[in-house]
Length: 336
Image 1: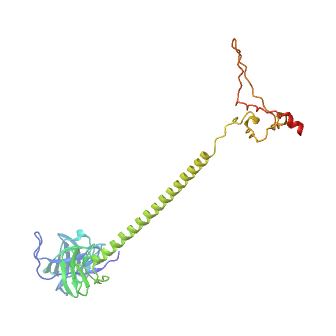
Image 2: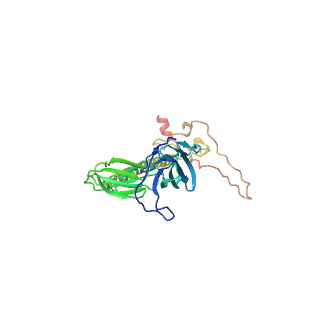
């Protein structure tokens, strides 16, 4: 760790807390840094023979007749002009220190007390802003007892002993902010130019336009989904209707054809023929043409004769009765 040598000497009277020596001078030291305690108004001369430093009631360093009477350590060191160097300050180094100067006869020439206080150095301040509500802030993350001052165009607009301060600006101003962070051992400054895009357009209007666009996109997406779903349902219904129509047409075609029953043909083809239409001229029985094909004689079932009577039954359609042929007169035959 890099160490820095800093000297903080405060002259004049300060308010002291209860238990502190009112005659002491408050000195501030930075944590983890070296500190040189100088004796204010002291000039080394030939009459000075002895210089001693005490922490509370413990003697820590001494030089007599330009000879160190202490063992150099990693914590304390002393120069011939009486300056005490404290290395790598820690919080427990905060205490009351006293220096005494004597001449060669042991006469006290000077007594001085120092109240050493330790503070942590500050981290760099940060400036942040929000254009939505025109708010700017300055904050410090690390450091002891920071004091913040916020400037707008070289004018202090907000300050306070805390780690965060906020301020709301007017959009008509030229927004150049500067923040100072300080304590007794450190001071840091940062400057930022706040730029908000298109301040002339109201932020709420921009938000409304964005929300409206999002709602419109959602509506369009839902509409597309709805139309696609309706098309699928319509195609499904059309397919079902075509299938139903095809089934109906098949059933109608089947209903038009008469059912063919096996064995329904006539057993006697000759009997199924239409009898000849009687002509104007009578014909002899010997000259009647025979029907084509074999003539199937109807089968008759003989029933047991009843006593005294005998009935002849025939199966099938009744046979046509033979026509009675009139004999030609003899005179006609002879004349021919």
